[in-house]
Image 1 (tube, rainbow, N blue to C red):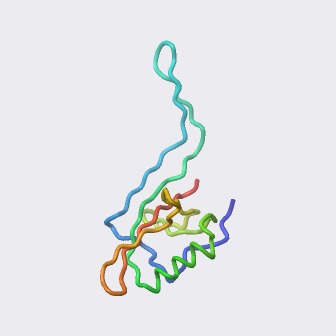
Image 2: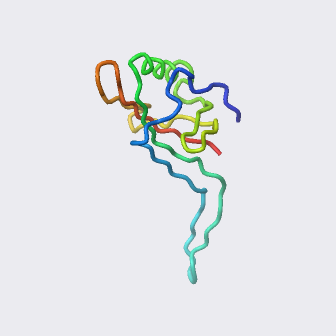
Image 3: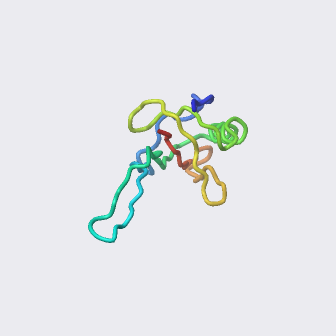
Length: 122
């Protein structure tokens, strides 16, 4: 499925080095056998998960909030600049346990560190 939205150009295009993490792999099923090694089967491609942090101004935080709540409504796929490959990839946000899509940490007046989790779709 193609995406209809893109990460706003007014938001940072590259995250901070600190706070970046990425996991990936394939979907696989591991089945124990009565004898011998377990059977391992590939089920398909697995989305990569990225944790990223950005420094944003108060205005950029408002742009992010509007993008999440009004544009993609928290669920739509969007084009996003992948921090490692620099390619635009199809992604969606991963909400936290209570449905939180971002965290804010105060840095200085008008400056915030914003943390999000992104799922890069295969």
